Amino acid sequence: MKRAMGFAIAAVTLASLAWVAIPIVLIQPFGPQTSRGLAVSYALRASSPWLTLCFLAAGLAVVVVLWPRLVTWKGRALACVAVALLGGSAILARQNHFEWMFQPLPRPEFVAAAEAKDVAEDDLVLGVHAGTETRAYPVLALAYHHIVNDSIAGEPIVATY
Image (cartoon, rainbow, N blue to C red; front, side):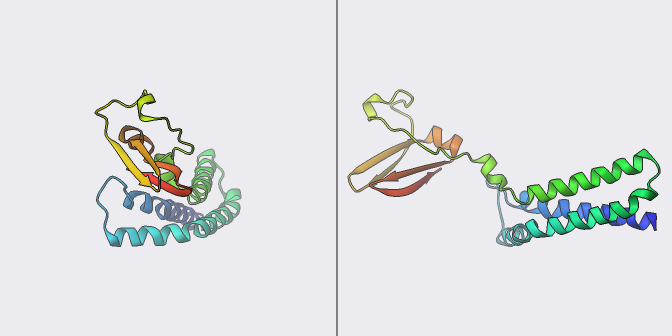
């Protein structure tokens, strides 16, 4: 019984970790993606918040039953590690790891072209013109932030590179 419960906690922990890790591996913003891989990733991401909580509850239930039978510190340490991994999966399932990679520039500040000090004459810019307004977003800044939230002529836009 103790061995079966040990396998159960290991299986639940590995399943929870896989459920969260597979979309992270399949969705690669700078690498090739397949439509099948994206479909699998989005399906796993959609169910991961509630499923990882179920995995955590199942893992805790197994550890509570198994705890009195774990007489060595090694067994109890492994049980604690499993619960910590399950908790970590439950937290990670509620995160958007792409937001960690791409930090939008929330409040860009603009100056006239003649006053721009951080942009050389030969720097590439992404230009946007709407109505009577024009903006130039330096590609070097976009390469770091990837996203600029702005508004032009009263319309919100997202500039990205």
